[in-house]
Length: 94
Image (cartoon, rainbow, N blue to C red; front, side, top):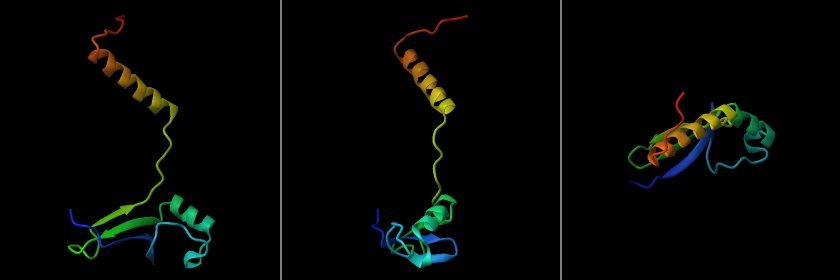
């Protein structure tokens, strides 16, 4: 795997090079404004290499939703079912 040359983030419509840190006053935006822009999906990351100078990997940055109780219960149920089958435990039949 080829080492990347540089990584930068963009706000849609504006070029921002450097760290992925939010800095007070960067491009005229407060940290609160940048956080709001980040939360609304207005940032992406672009990774450049010597092979693909225009950008090898580009990814939009989105907030990942918190898992809901239902998805946690469903995931736990699937795990218990798989574990019981692996251990030879049969579930009660109706």
